[in-house]
Image (tube, rainbow, N blue to C red):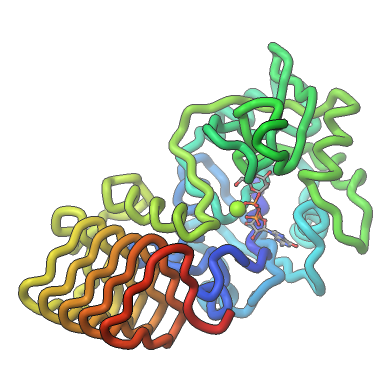
Length: 341
Ligand code: GDD
Ligand code: MG
């Protein structure tokens, strides 16, 4: 079965990291997040992916020039301008010659959802579209769905205020579609699948949704990107064996770590340098990051080649952009974003 992966968003909530790199190329324990998404598609007989690109497309094309990831064939559809989610699906479906039942995946979601079960659910109901659902406490940053007993969608509301959300079941960002759906998407303008196409299909009674209890996380915010890293450190399967994992710290073999470093739930990527008496807890250090002696870094994302000055204390939730230098003895906590904003 063919699948479209949407990776054309600007990743605004992960700025400044996403100024340098598209969200799906950010490393999840040393491996681009996109490869983790491919690992789960490969498990479920997806044999061809159309990567729907718009923002910084060259980084994907340069990283995967051979046209395959994890054994799955890969083609690219580069939008001339951002078409929003449904516009992107239409554009990629036409570019990829899709003419049969197909999958669509939000490329920033990490899950072990059983895709084969979702496709079977879709086929049994003769649906035009089927959405995977996930239950959360606060649905306000997601698409919220209500269904009848058979799974037919009664309402789809994108990002409602928390108090008016009609349920706690959210759009998990994985869809099965029949090719006819493409004809409902207007050409040559921005169209949102969540705000336009899902409500339209729901009104026609052609949209279904399947609740699921699988592991699921949208990695699009600093907190959730950190959590996804921690979950991989704790064993969530992303299709590779994690070498160089000591306890809950993963360390690239090229990293230099001085004695006396205390770490828990930490990712220390390629060419990082960590000074003496550093404390790292719930931290992702991207390639080439430097943490100088005595710094304490907690619940933070440190971008490529950034430097954390000696004796600094960084707390929830600092996002330090590429090449940024945090002066020594800094005290930073709260929603701190450092770099070109
Ligand atoms: N090609 C392309 N073009 N891709 C896009 C565009 C575009 O114009 N806009 C967004 N995308 C991609 C993003 O890169 C991402 O992989 C996916 O579409 C979803 O966009 P996000 O920006 O991550 O949306 P969200 O997290 O706020 O909400 C979406 O995901 C939730 C689940 O994670 C919605 O689908 C919600 O309904 C859903 O609950
Ligand atoms: Mg998202």
